[in-house]
Amino acid sequence: MTELSLRLAISFVQILAEMSIVMLTVAIMTLAERKVLGWMQDRMGPMEVGPYGILQPLADGVKLFFKEDIVPAGANKAMFALAPMLTMVVSMIGFAVIPFGPDMTLDIGGLTIKPFVVADINIGILYILAIASIGAYGIILGGWSSNSKYSLLGGLRSAAQVISYELNVGLAIVGVLLLSGSLSLVEITEAQAGGFWHWFVWGARPDGFFPIHTQVFAFVVFVIAGVAETNRIPFDLPEAESELVAGFFTEYSGMKFAFFVSAEYASMVLVSCVAASLFLGGWNAPYPGTIFEYIGLEQLAWIEHIVWFAAKVYFFLFMFIWLRATLPRLRYDQLMRFGWKVLLPIALANIIITAVTVYLFPRG
Amino acid sequence: MEQAFFFYFACVIAATSVLVVALRNPIYSTLALLVMFFHVAGLYVTLHAEFLAAVQIIVYAGAILVLYLFVVMLLNLKQDVRYHRQWPMAAAVGATLVIEAIILTAMKGSTTPAVATDAETAIGGAGNTAAIGDVLYTTYLFPFEVASLILLVAMIGAIVLAKKDVGEREA
Image 1 (cartoon, rainbow over the protein chains, first blue to last red):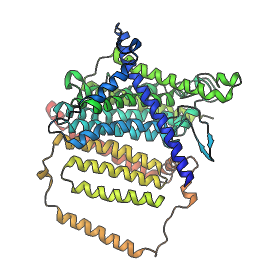
Image 2: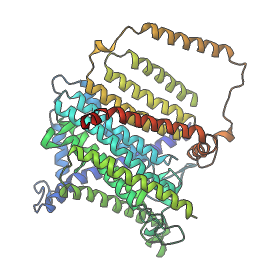
Image 3: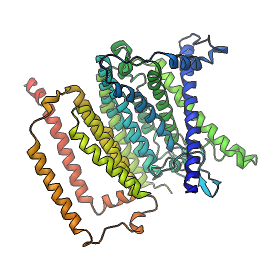
Image 4: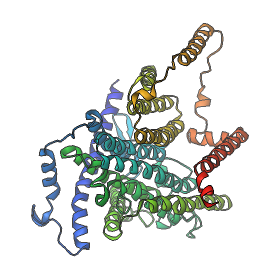
């Protein structure tokens, strides 16, 4: 039984560490979004709290924590409280299978653990898809239980949108699965080691440079569908403020509102992590090996891997903000037509082409 | 340990299944069904069928049940509309199940239990995803293709039904 409790304790520490990192990233993102949007619109962004406004997330958090928690009349109280929790939990547990560092093992008290991934399960990417599909419930329930027509409309829009774009996410991933032959994110990342030309977005075979198995189309479909699944501009129909006040969280205030907002940012981080792991080689550097290895510090190579992973994730997060500053919101029929008539055929064609090229030119 | 998990999953599945039909609010029924799907997936995990567990959640909880919830919310069903006198049907189905349970309990011991051997659970070191794919495209290729054909027919049928008025308007 001691072995079990040790394993539980280690897992608990890992989960705690991973959650703190994610929540810290979420806090950084709330500030970065306002700052970067400000720069892109030729203004300063928040400047009042702390030097250069960098303590703004703290001030926002304190403010939301002390706000009165208002439950609208006629709302379903239990569901109203459940919805933000569900959204938050769903957006956090997806991180369990993300490998944010190299696949090394540590020996602690006779147990072999992987320090940089909480759970290396053999269906990692399916687990992420399952979790992502559950995310719609929090939004629908929040919209329904508020007893407000704007909230309900936002929730229904979100349901239709998530179902439509989830399909594209799933199909875009299939090409990567064909190349790696595994559903585990750790193995998918390892299959892309040895330079940027082995990343699946480029798709060179292990012994060459030529991008015969390129997944660049799947990559574009995945990123667009990922933006849609996180309800971000230009796909933020569920919370379109010019039509629905604030969509499904119109009636929410205080900490419940904070849960919804941080869940949205956390799922942005999750989508970025998955995109980096599947298409941009995860923690692999864009050159073979690591610089630490060349100068003889192999035991520190994991730092370089983690830095590369963080760099890729932050690139995607920046892109989310960039899109928000650039693009106007789609109309609802445009959203549906784009998902079903543009992205879906591209994803399907990509599967067929990848399957044929993998059959003709097998990977090693 | 595995037994404890099995009994937990089984109890929750039984309880939530009853709740699905017993609860008065259709939204709560749908949520009870959601909890049940999760515990069925948990049952699959204890059987080392992780792929099935993930697919169970993606397909049933993630797609089908969201559509149920969608419809229930849009229709906003009145509680009395939902309840017809269905107890004769319920009694017939229930009696069949009870008889089946009695027969299965009575037959216990006369047949050898089909416990998966180590060799069976460890089909392909890569996990059961590869094994399922392998079997689906060799042994069960024909049923698999038939199933996909049926789905295609259902899809075309749904489109024809939904698009009925478009043709009439043009004519």
